[in-house]
Image (cartoon, rainbow, N blue to C red):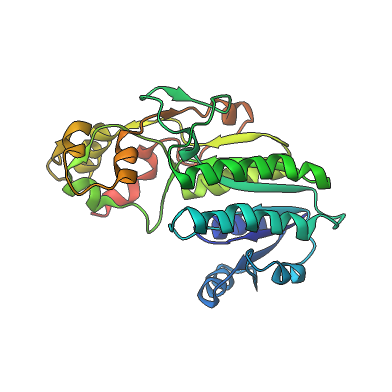
Length: 293
Protein backbone atom coordinates (compact mmCIF):
# COMPACT_ATOMS: atom_id res chain seq x y z
CA UNK A 1 0.00 0.00 0.00
CA UNK A 2 1.14 3.55 -0.77
CA UNK A 3 1.01 6.91 0.98
CA UNK A 4 -0.57 9.65 -1.15
CA UNK A 5 -0.33 13.38 -0.45
CA UNK A 6 -3.02 15.43 -2.19
CA UNK A 7 -1.98 19.09 -2.51
CA UNK A 8 -5.07 21.26 -2.83
CA UNK A 9 -7.41 18.57 -1.56
CA UNK A 10 -10.74 20.05 -2.59
CA UNK A 11 -13.65 18.98 -4.80
CA UNK A 12 -11.84 16.21 -6.68
CA UNK A 13 -9.14 15.64 -4.08
CA UNK A 14 -11.50 14.66 -1.28
CA UNK A 15 -13.22 12.13 -3.53
CA UNK A 16 -9.82 10.80 -4.63
CA UNK A 17 -8.68 10.51 -1.02
CA UNK A 18 -11.85 8.64 -0.16
CA UNK A 19 -11.30 6.19 -3.02
CA UNK A 20 -7.64 5.62 -2.20
CA UNK A 21 -8.27 5.14 1.49
CA UNK A 22 -11.08 2.67 0.76
CA UNK A 23 -8.53 0.64 -1.22
CA UNK A 24 -6.19 0.52 1.79
CA UNK A 25 -3.81 3.37 0.97
CA UNK A 26 -2.77 6.09 3.42
CA UNK A 27 -3.85 9.60 2.46
CA UNK A 28 -2.89 13.08 3.61
CA UNK A 29 -4.99 15.96 2.28
CA UNK A 30 -3.34 19.39 2.19
CA UNK A 31 -5.14 22.73 2.22
CA UNK A 32 -4.27 26.35 3.00
CA UNK A 33 -7.39 27.21 4.99
CA UNK A 34 -8.84 25.94 8.26
CA UNK A 35 -12.21 25.38 6.58
CA UNK A 36 -10.49 23.25 3.95
CA UNK A 37 -8.87 21.14 6.63
CA UNK A 38 -12.25 20.60 8.27
CA UNK A 39 -13.67 19.29 5.00
CA UNK A 40 -10.84 16.78 4.67
CA UNK A 41 -11.22 15.57 8.24
CA UNK A 42 -14.98 15.21 7.72
CA UNK A 43 -14.18 12.89 4.81
CA UNK A 44 -12.27 10.66 7.21
CA UNK A 45 -8.61 11.03 6.38
CA UNK A 46 -5.65 13.03 7.65
CA UNK A 47 -5.52 16.78 6.99
CA UNK A 48 -2.46 19.01 7.11
CA UNK A 49 -2.09 22.74 6.51
CA UNK A 50 0.45 24.04 4.01
CA UNK A 51 0.69 26.63 1.24
CA UNK A 52 2.53 25.89 -2.01
CA UNK A 53 3.44 29.57 -2.34
CA UNK A 54 5.31 29.34 0.99
CA UNK A 55 7.83 26.54 0.46
CA UNK A 56 8.88 26.44 4.11
CA UNK A 57 5.44 25.01 4.94
CA UNK A 58 5.94 22.09 2.53
CA UNK A 59 8.93 20.74 4.43
CA UNK A 60 6.60 19.49 7.18
CA UNK A 61 4.53 17.33 4.83
CA UNK A 62 4.96 13.58 5.22
CA UNK A 63 6.98 11.36 2.92
CA UNK A 64 4.81 9.85 0.20
CA UNK A 65 5.04 7.60 -2.83
CA UNK A 66 2.42 9.59 -4.72
CA UNK A 67 2.02 13.37 -4.87
CA UNK A 68 -1.15 14.73 -6.47
CA UNK A 69 -0.96 18.45 -7.24
CA UNK A 70 -4.57 19.60 -7.47
CA UNK A 71 -4.19 23.12 -6.06
CA UNK A 72 -6.53 25.82 -7.33
CA UNK A 73 -5.88 29.49 -8.03
CA UNK A 74 -9.45 30.23 -6.96
CA UNK A 75 -10.62 31.43 -10.36
CA UNK A 76 -8.45 34.52 -10.18
CA UNK A 77 -6.20 36.02 -12.88
CA UNK A 78 -3.07 34.87 -14.65
CA UNK A 79 -0.61 36.15 -12.04
CA UNK A 80 -2.39 34.32 -9.25
CA UNK A 81 -2.43 31.21 -11.44
CA UNK A 82 1.30 31.58 -12.06
CA UNK A 83 2.04 31.74 -8.33
CA UNK A 84 0.10 28.52 -7.75
CA UNK A 85 0.60 26.42 -10.88
CA UNK A 86 4.15 27.42 -11.81
CA UNK A 87 5.89 28.63 -8.64
CA UNK A 88 3.84 26.41 -6.33
CA UNK A 89 4.34 23.33 -8.47
CA UNK A 90 8.08 23.95 -8.58
CA UNK A 91 8.11 24.42 -4.80
CA UNK A 92 6.31 21.10 -4.39
CA UNK A 93 8.71 19.26 -6.69
CA UNK A 94 11.66 20.76 -4.80
CA UNK A 95 10.15 19.72 -1.45
CA UNK A 96 10.03 16.09 -2.57
CA UNK A 97 13.12 16.01 -4.80
CA UNK A 98 15.40 14.53 -2.14
CA UNK A 99 12.87 12.10 -0.70
CA UNK A 100 13.56 8.58 -1.91
CA UNK A 101 9.99 7.53 -1.19
CA UNK A 102 8.46 9.73 -3.89
CA UNK A 103 7.84 7.89 -7.14
CA UNK A 104 5.17 9.84 -9.01
CA UNK A 105 3.56 13.26 -9.30
CA UNK A 106 0.16 13.86 -10.89
CA UNK A 107 -0.64 17.40 -12.00
CA UNK A 108 -4.29 18.24 -12.71
CA UNK A 109 -4.59 20.51 -15.73
CA UNK A 110 -7.46 21.64 -17.96
CA UNK A 111 -8.66 21.10 -21.53
CA UNK A 112 -8.48 24.89 -21.80
CA UNK A 113 -4.87 24.48 -22.95
CA UNK A 114 -6.12 23.37 -26.38
CA UNK A 115 -7.66 26.68 -27.36
CA UNK A 116 -10.11 26.77 -30.28
CA UNK A 117 -10.38 23.90 -32.77
CA UNK A 118 -13.62 24.88 -34.52
CA UNK A 119 -15.53 21.98 -33.01
CA UNK A 120 -13.06 19.34 -34.22
CA UNK A 121 -11.81 16.48 -32.04
CA UNK A 122 -8.64 16.84 -29.99
CA UNK A 123 -6.62 14.23 -28.11
CA UNK A 124 -3.30 13.88 -26.29
CA UNK A 125 -1.37 14.28 -29.54
CA UNK A 126 -3.05 17.58 -30.53
CA UNK A 127 -0.85 20.68 -30.38
CA UNK A 128 -1.71 23.08 -27.59
CA UNK A 129 -2.79 26.62 -28.42
CA UNK A 130 -3.98 28.37 -25.24
CA UNK A 131 -5.86 31.58 -25.98
CA UNK A 132 -5.68 33.30 -22.58
CA UNK A 133 -2.86 34.25 -20.23
CA UNK A 134 -4.21 31.83 -17.64
CA UNK A 135 -4.33 28.83 -19.99
CA UNK A 136 -0.81 29.72 -21.16
CA UNK A 137 0.22 29.39 -17.51
CA UNK A 138 -1.43 25.95 -17.41
CA UNK A 139 0.56 24.90 -20.47
CA UNK A 140 3.78 26.00 -18.76
CA UNK A 141 2.82 24.04 -15.65
CA UNK A 142 2.23 20.92 -17.72
CA UNK A 143 5.79 21.14 -19.03
CA UNK A 144 7.09 21.48 -15.47
CA UNK A 145 5.09 18.44 -14.35
CA UNK A 146 6.38 16.30 -17.22
CA UNK A 147 9.97 17.53 -17.53
CA UNK A 148 11.25 19.05 -14.29
CA UNK A 149 9.99 16.06 -12.30
CA UNK A 150 12.24 13.82 -14.37
CA UNK A 151 15.26 15.94 -13.45
CA UNK A 152 14.81 14.88 -9.81
CA UNK A 153 13.88 11.25 -10.42
CA UNK A 154 10.10 11.55 -10.15
CA UNK A 155 7.78 10.41 -12.94
CA UNK A 156 5.20 13.07 -13.79
CA UNK A 157 1.76 12.65 -15.32
CA UNK A 158 -0.68 15.32 -16.47
CA UNK A 159 -4.40 14.62 -16.01
CA UNK A 160 -6.11 17.13 -18.31
CA UNK A 161 -9.65 17.58 -16.96
CA UNK A 162 -12.71 18.60 -18.92
CA UNK A 163 -15.46 20.55 -17.15
CA UNK A 164 -16.21 19.07 -13.75
CA UNK A 165 -19.71 18.38 -12.53
CA UNK A 166 -21.26 16.33 -9.74
CA UNK A 167 -22.65 16.87 -6.24
CA UNK A 168 -23.19 20.59 -5.60
CA UNK A 169 -22.07 21.38 -9.16
CA UNK A 170 -24.92 20.36 -11.44
CA UNK A 171 -25.93 23.96 -12.28
CA UNK A 172 -29.34 22.87 -13.54
CA UNK A 173 -30.79 26.38 -13.35
CA UNK A 174 -28.27 27.66 -15.87
CA UNK A 175 -29.50 25.22 -18.50
CA UNK A 176 -33.18 25.36 -17.62
CA UNK A 177 -33.30 29.16 -17.74
CA UNK A 178 -31.08 29.83 -20.76
CA UNK A 179 -30.36 31.28 -23.13
CA UNK A 180 -27.98 28.46 -24.03
CA UNK A 181 -25.20 29.36 -26.49
CA UNK A 182 -24.38 26.84 -29.22
CA UNK A 183 -21.19 24.79 -29.03
CA UNK A 184 -19.87 21.70 -27.30
CA UNK A 185 -19.55 20.70 -23.66
CA UNK A 186 -16.67 18.44 -22.64
CA UNK A 187 -17.42 17.06 -19.20
CA UNK A 188 -16.41 14.56 -16.55
CA UNK A 189 -18.18 13.66 -13.32
CA UNK A 190 -16.24 14.35 -10.13
CA UNK A 191 -16.19 10.66 -9.21
CA UNK A 192 -14.61 9.78 -12.55
CA UNK A 193 -12.13 12.66 -12.38
CA UNK A 194 -10.91 11.18 -9.10
CA UNK A 195 -11.24 7.69 -10.53
CA UNK A 196 -8.91 8.48 -13.43
CA UNK A 197 -6.15 9.58 -11.05
CA UNK A 198 -6.79 6.55 -8.85
CA UNK A 199 -6.53 4.28 -11.90
CA UNK A 200 -3.37 5.89 -13.26
CA UNK A 201 -1.64 5.48 -9.90
CA UNK A 202 -2.84 2.06 -8.78
CA UNK A 203 -2.62 0.35 -12.17
CA UNK A 204 0.67 2.20 -12.76
CA UNK A 205 0.16 3.60 -16.25
CA UNK A 206 0.80 6.85 -18.14
CA UNK A 207 4.15 7.65 -16.58
CA UNK A 208 5.61 10.80 -18.17
CA UNK A 209 2.45 11.17 -20.24
CA UNK A 210 -0.68 13.28 -20.48
CA UNK A 211 -4.13 11.72 -20.13
CA UNK A 212 -7.31 13.45 -21.25
CA UNK A 213 -9.86 12.99 -18.46
CA UNK A 214 -13.19 13.43 -20.23
CA UNK A 215 -16.27 11.25 -20.55
CA UNK A 216 -17.45 9.33 -23.60
CA UNK A 217 -19.58 11.98 -25.26
CA UNK A 218 -18.74 15.60 -26.05
CA UNK A 219 -22.23 17.08 -25.80
CA UNK A 220 -23.86 19.56 -28.12
CA UNK A 221 -24.96 22.29 -25.70
CA UNK A 222 -28.42 22.70 -27.21
CA UNK A 223 -29.05 18.95 -27.19
CA UNK A 224 -27.78 18.70 -23.62
CA UNK A 225 -29.97 21.59 -22.44
CA UNK A 226 -33.07 20.09 -24.06
CA UNK A 227 -32.31 16.71 -22.45
CA UNK A 228 -31.99 18.39 -19.05
CA UNK A 229 -35.30 20.20 -19.58
CA UNK A 230 -37.12 17.03 -20.61
CA UNK A 231 -35.65 15.07 -17.68
CA UNK A 232 -36.84 17.82 -15.31
CA UNK A 233 -40.27 18.09 -16.91
CA UNK A 234 -39.62 21.65 -18.08
CA UNK A 235 -39.95 23.35 -21.48
CA UNK A 236 -36.90 23.54 -23.71
CA UNK A 237 -34.81 26.59 -22.77
CA UNK A 238 -34.19 29.53 -25.12
CA UNK A 239 -31.08 29.28 -27.27
CA UNK A 240 -28.69 31.60 -29.06
CA UNK A 241 -25.98 31.32 -31.67
CA UNK A 242 -22.37 32.33 -31.06
CA UNK A 243 -22.96 35.46 -33.17
CA UNK A 244 -25.96 36.41 -31.06
CA UNK A 245 -23.99 35.91 -27.86
CA UNK A 246 -21.06 37.95 -29.15
CA UNK A 247 -23.42 40.79 -30.03
CA UNK A 248 -23.87 41.42 -26.33
CA UNK A 249 -21.96 44.63 -25.62
CA UNK A 250 -21.03 43.75 -22.04
CA UNK A 251 -18.74 40.81 -22.84
CA UNK A 252 -15.08 41.18 -21.90
CA UNK A 253 -12.37 40.18 -24.36
CA UNK A 254 -11.70 37.04 -22.33
CA UNK A 255 -15.41 36.14 -22.33
CA UNK A 256 -15.58 36.64 -26.09
CA UNK A 257 -12.67 34.25 -26.62
CA UNK A 258 -14.37 31.72 -24.38
CA UNK A 259 -17.59 31.92 -26.40
CA UNK A 260 -15.70 31.43 -29.68
CA UNK A 261 -13.72 28.46 -28.41
CA UNK A 262 -15.09 25.09 -29.52
CA UNK A 263 -13.61 21.60 -29.49
CA UNK A 264 -14.53 17.99 -28.79
CA UNK A 265 -12.24 15.99 -26.53
CA UNK A 266 -11.54 12.33 -27.22
CA UNK A 267 -10.97 9.84 -24.39
CA UNK A 268 -9.76 7.00 -26.62
CA UNK A 269 -6.43 6.82 -24.80
CA UNK A 270 -8.16 6.59 -21.43
CA UNK A 271 -10.07 3.57 -22.73
CA UNK A 272 -6.80 2.07 -23.98
CA UNK A 273 -5.61 2.34 -20.38
CA UNK A 274 -8.68 0.23 -19.41
CA UNK A 275 -10.39 2.85 -17.29
CA UNK A 276 -14.07 2.05 -16.64
CA UNK A 277 -16.40 5.03 -16.15
CA UNK A 278 -18.96 5.25 -13.38
CA UNK A 279 -20.75 7.91 -15.44
CA UNK A 280 -19.90 7.39 -19.14
CA UNK A 281 -22.05 10.32 -20.32
CA UNK A 282 -24.13 13.15 -18.91
CA UNK A 283 -27.22 10.94 -19.10
CA UNK A 284 -25.94 8.72 -16.31
CA UNK A 285 -24.30 11.60 -14.45
CA UNK A 286 -27.40 13.80 -14.38
CA UNK A 287 -29.99 11.04 -13.88
CA UNK A 288 -30.26 11.48 -10.12
CA UNK A 289 -30.34 15.29 -9.84
CA UNK A 290 -32.85 15.72 -12.68
CA UNK A 291 -35.10 13.04 -11.16
CA UNK A 292 -35.11 15.02 -7.91
CA UNK A 293 -36.39 18.24 -9.54
